[in-house]
Length: 122
Image 1 (cartoon, rainbow, N blue to C red):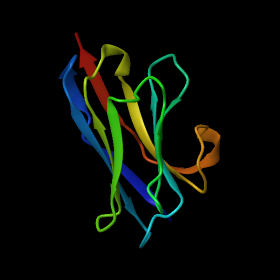
Image 2 (image 1 turned 135 degrees about the horizontal axis):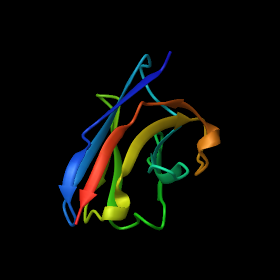
Image 3 (image 1 turned 180 degrees about the horizontal axis):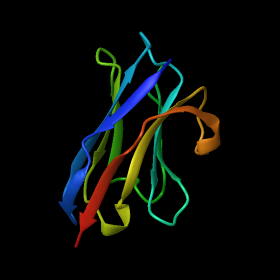
């Protein structure tokens, strides 16, 4: 089975940066689409960014466009989320996910990590 493990979360002040990692196991090559979602307490899970493994197409939510960058490392079978200019509203548990096609809906992704906490203070 495909397993996804997130890391890199933590506490940072507003305006700071963090880089999240999502390492995949159980596959020789990811393929498909890898995405990042986030969920704050009392809120629904929301889309952050996705990357199409073959071709490298990327797409971001309006709230993170220009501040976050999603990227991949083929050798490590790992997806990253570089987060710059962080705001308190970015505070959430961040999840990585794998699906068959490009989508901003969590329902279309079959494999999920357990999440990593990101807290941004003012």
